[in-house]
Image (cartoon, rainbow, N blue to C red; front, top):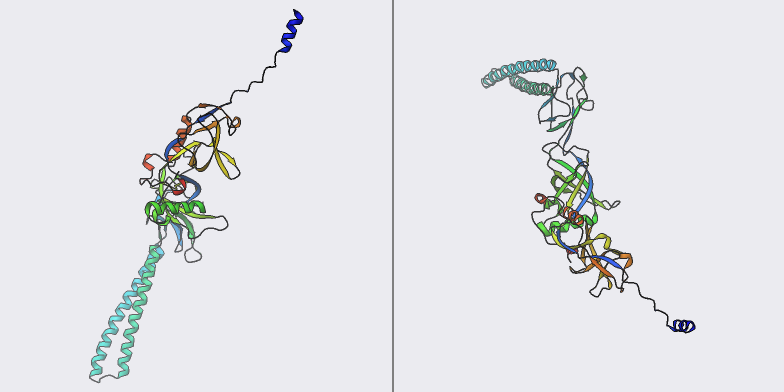
Length: 400
């Protein structure tokens, strides 16, 4: 019986190798959202106006009635130079003018008498010409005296050094009690003033972005970037969002061939003086109006040479690849311009286990709330009050 049992076992056919079960992958459906393209650049703040305050007359500084670093108004007195010598000079010039005006009156009377006597042939023509020349000379002297008086008055006015523009004043380069020099080429620098409202922010943008802004401006407002006043928003290093709103008001007249960039300028209201010239700032510019698009996690996008693709699970459970055209990145989600449908089950996890044509076990999960929250923040760019008030059609390069 033992021999018979061993024979029966030995005659059984060997068991066939069972195929492993299909690998499990995580799939998600694309999300359909309204988004707006935003570009960010690093720039710096510059005051539209800057003035170097220098002495225009020489003298002793007797007062400096301003606070260093404070905001000053146009015409506000910053320094006072001892005006006593200039007042004395002004009075002297007034005296000279009065004396020569009296001389004009005298020569005019003499000329009038000479005219009467000449008609009666009581004086010669030479005497009349002499009287006429004396009158003209006296008039010329009065004109010179008036010019000297105006100069003396101007020098007296310059003893009160005022702010030529409204803005923030710097420190005192010269303090009270010091002598200063005036005049061209040797004037003593007293302080500087820079305007603070509005503030300029300059950035350099690449050629591709500039052309995109040109197309956006022409499509939405029928104008060039220089005329369209495209909105822009800036933030400082310590700010989380972009609280300062302005417009693009200037673009340079040529592209730098060395860097492939062109300079843009945003003008930002700064009534509270919070923005300081020289600070670095991050500028955000809209490159399109709101448009609808499908988005998938950026990690799901594969690359093969110059092409991009997604791996999707078909109804029968097999894997297929879809070539896609990519749009902008919003948080961790990528806009897909073309190549994907709303009901495509896109593999977002387990890509290394999936092979085109092979079967997989798809486990569907929605896109994470964190990614959707980041999408909303990135796609809107700003809060509702800052959204572009005039929605535009999707740019041609971003429509599915």
